[in-house]
Amino acid sequence: MGLPAFRVSQLIHWMYERNAVSIDDITEFSKPLREKLKGFSYIGGVKIIKKTDSPDGTIKLLFGLEDGLSVEGVLIPDEYRLTLCVSSQVGCAMGCRFCLTATMGFIRNLRADEIAGQVTAVRRELNANANSEITNIVFMGMGEPLKNFNEVVKGINILTDYMGISKRRITLSTAGVVPELQKLYKEIPEVNLAVSLNATTDETRSALMPVNNKYNIGALLRACGRLPISPRRRITFGYVLIKGVNDTQADARRLIALLKGLSAKVNLIPFNEYDTAKFEPPDEKTVLEFQQILVDRHVTAFIRKSKGRGIYAACGQLKTCHETDN
Ligand code: SF4
Image (cartoon, rainbow, N blue to C red; front, side):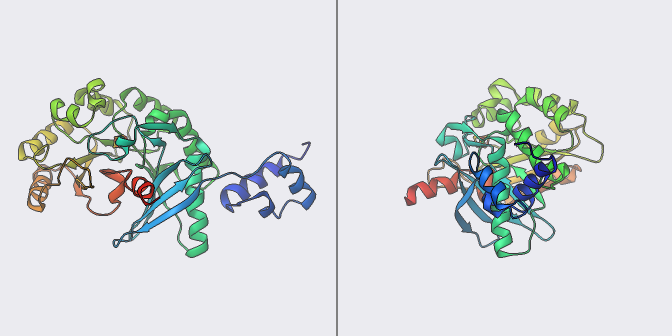
């Protein structure tokens, strides 16, 4: 358009910091300039189409995309942080047996702008309602982020370069797509990594997570061990505890052995039941004993309970509920 370069900075500022909904919002541009821009472009976006408050303060979100599809997210406040869990794909091809998203199958990858757009949509909502700021982003919603590598990396770059979110406050969770792990650390070594482990034998893990047939526990943990993680940082291993499947004391002891030598911490997540679920959570005593075995051997282990229920063990619940409502 023959405009000076600073107009680009202004446009980015209005889109990603002021969360403009339309070109008309960019009042820094003259009316004729706005009309000219509107002749061939618009500010697209992701919209929040449903919000569900949980008693623990967690807010489940359903994001509408321009093509009519939708993905889910979760906003998780705690004392010091406001974490937004975002999706990277519509549906998921990974087929984890404990996950509701898996039953939808894979529909499509999200584009980078749709990944960043989930954050913008929430920021617009927060500006309207409160003074809070999103401090952390986790890729634990629908989809396997490493199966949408390029758009996820581009999306993270939008979040960090234009939206003021530090890479160190971004966590990417994977079911264990081994070849992409090294690639991720080459592109963005600062992001935090969460690995969904969920079993201590290949037999059980393959039964729960088909990805294990391709990249088994040994291959996954060797790949984790080769990552250039700085000594002060740790990989988070997610472990969904399922009654009678992976919750024995022998599992806890095997988990300690598997994580030996790795800079690791463990998130234990009692399975969250949903209507058609084939699994059950263990009782509280079993969960606490499992944790204690890890802690006694100096493995940092947290129990993640109700917060972000839709995120970890049964992602896809919100979307499925919404479709049932309609
Ligand atoms: S748990 Fe994650 S990777 Fe596995 S099917 Fe669900 S969304 Fe996909």
